[in-house]
Length: 133
Image (cartoon, rainbow, N blue to C red; front, side, top):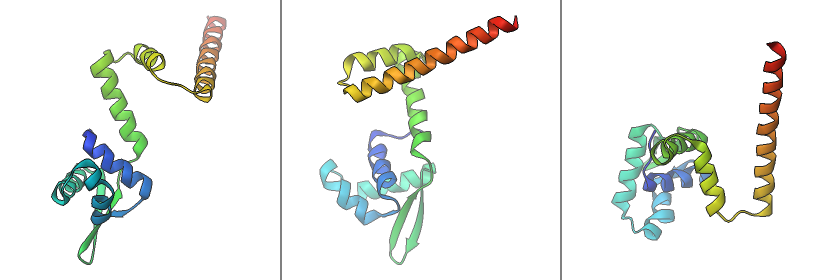
């Protein structure tokens, strides 16, 4: 599922807050983003149509609930970004992000751990393949 930048803003609010009424989305996002009530309602309707949200009518109000996991949308958006910008190759993307981002010592430690674990897994797999041949 492809989300526009504006839809990401709405989805992040609902992922973080849980089931939300349209009026709450309008109050939280409308003024800060320069969106009218109708614009927010249109986005909510579009997200329901895409299958990202479900809706339930409670009296005269509508409550919106996420129907997709954030991780699934992040995975899809990440894959699309990699394909479009880096030809599907993750290594140049990671190198670019590391070079151009401000990373804390904690971030760097996590990256080192991840790289070490990937490197260790690769070394183990190479040794196992070599011993089986």
